Length: 117
Image 1: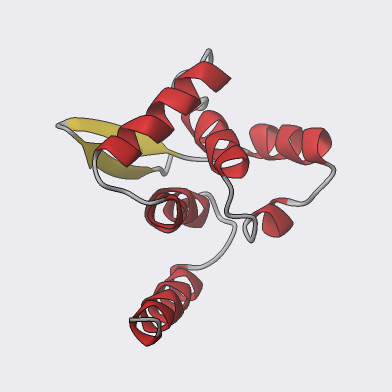
Image 2: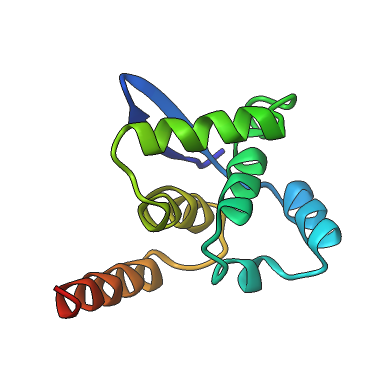
């Protein structure tokens, strides 16, 4: 099974979104996964983190997802960075979009960031 790995303080976090968890997210939110991709909020990010960990840790809870989010922040990540460098990468290996699209998105965000400096 494919998954995305990211290291935080020496711990390897593996992220993947399965089809069953994708369907559960869509049923709970009433939105498609691709619509949620554009929603950079703590609520959306922690929801994705929760479900992206459940393939490996079936009991991974909301509380666990909040703690993981806080761990990212404690390691210097911003909300946008968590979405791009963890959630989008996890969605990419889970088949939601191609790596090339992710690279284009990352480049556009980097250019936008440079323009605002």
